[in-house]
Image 1: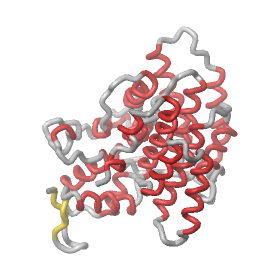
Image 2: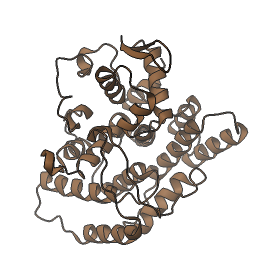
Image 3: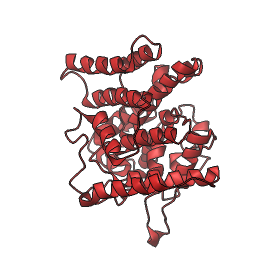
Image 4: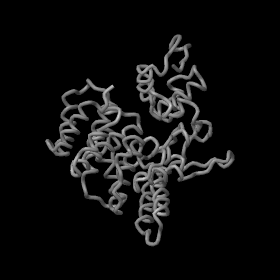
Length: 352
């Protein structure tokens, strides 16, 4: 497997001078954020990103090259790959720009700029209510904002944050406050799709406005953790003794803002509390020579619980699309992590 795909720009970025490293980190974050929706960029995207980082082309030219590439291949590429490439280029461009206004209009504009021409509702607040089955919630959903109140909620949350004063807070208190703010902003879920990526870009630019040199490369490896932490910060099931918590999100933000080295494992957030063991080579990546991704480890846990589980059932448990699960399973099978025995309808999976 290509090393760039496994660890985008990692060693490359470390050896760059500061001005080019900043570009590399923007691309690394942009690519990593596609994982929240199970999207994987193409080799052409990586090549184009490197040209921008090396100074051969501007970030605007990179964006235009990606658009031209897909115009020439209309109908001959996967839509998911096209989305990953286009949105990655747009995130890299937005993160490279210094301009930013802390407002609901800016938040909506970021969504429009990221998804224009990809989603018909780019930059448009949803007019329907939503629910999403989440793996980390064992199939349950967060209560998202009501469609009739989205703009009011956006403007209220942002006005409250704009009026907040950080004077006198310790750094840990600051991290906690920002964790609460970004989790509430995300919980509104103002758009039909693309909420996590929009929130991440808006939040990174806000952190810079506050003076933090956010380590954007953290999103390259832990974007799914970021999303699951947002989910846990907005979920209560008091009957079962489960309460919303920003604990996991604060770990992520401590690494992002302060350069801490908290270990970030999705399994620790699962509400069942059954996936936190460290003696299992699948649960603990340090003991697993294959080093599966967090999503792959979750699929393995589901297969272990039910070898006959279907792709549709896995997708429902993980809160993602069947096509995302299909790509993950194909990748896992190619790495000899799992194998299918029997027919598609009556067969089952075995863990290799």
